[in-house]
Length: 361
Ligand code: TRP
Image (cartoon, rainbow, N blue to C red; front, side):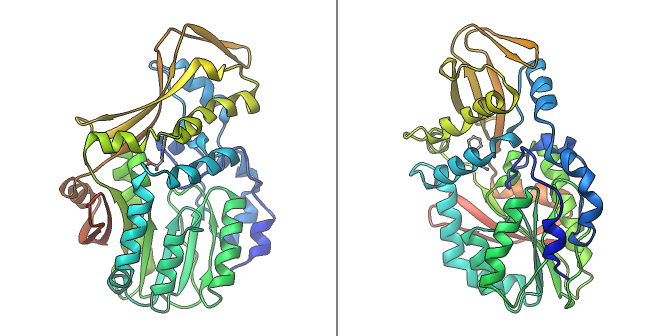
């Protein structure tokens, strides 16, 4: 079924090298759930799929308060910087999730069961995915859903080599829109959607709920013997100082990552942001239960993009990203509203992060 030639021929990557961290603004991007088989038909959708940096930047800077869409974080430099964020001592999320996988992957694989069709939102090149694929009992197929064609192709090429017996069915699509899943050669017992990294937290609550409902729908497409399910990484509410440190690492990598958004607008749109006039800020709102990342103007200044001028008074901030944190109860009640029941929760010893197994109710 997997037809790599087909995939290679289409959808040249636009500016948007989407990782897992698609955000609410992605909901505005074209609705293209594109199984591999029909990718050829979607060539013209490539630009829409890539989003529109100029239109989104102008709209965000014209709104009040000003905003910039975080989905544009992940160009090549942003992706490299994000990998470095994951290695920072303060950024506990990646390490905690990996520790959970290391300690509990056997139990996780048992919960998911044998002959699973594993769908992953994101490219699936990570260690977590490989651990899961290694431990699952005769998985039927692996279906990564990724908006960036080059990222998708690279990860599938690696996994195909490592797991020659698992059918690879890559789908080049924006996972925030419903997808018709490709059929595997062998019938699965169940379909599992894997969504690691606490990326759900980057969505506003109503969009997170919508996305969970959509995952439930996709997990239910299997027609297997068992109900579908969702395996998801969820970051937990914790001490404000720990949270704020994670998003303000001492080495300044997160700040560089955030400000790269402005560099990107300069590079790709000919904007004239003076990077020395802006700073990264990440603060935890206990009330909202989320880290709010902004870019703050350190002085009065004007910025120009495409003939438009935008004024920044000193200390004006632009909102760029939310990272919502959950309590186990809060997450379970949101999952329930999406028609999913939390049946197992694995946490790291310090209970910083959780990996949760949800089944369709
Ligand atoms: N999904 C990641 C998170 O919410 C993305 C991220 C890490 C991020 N550090 C960031 C987003 C800093 C914006 C700013 O943790």
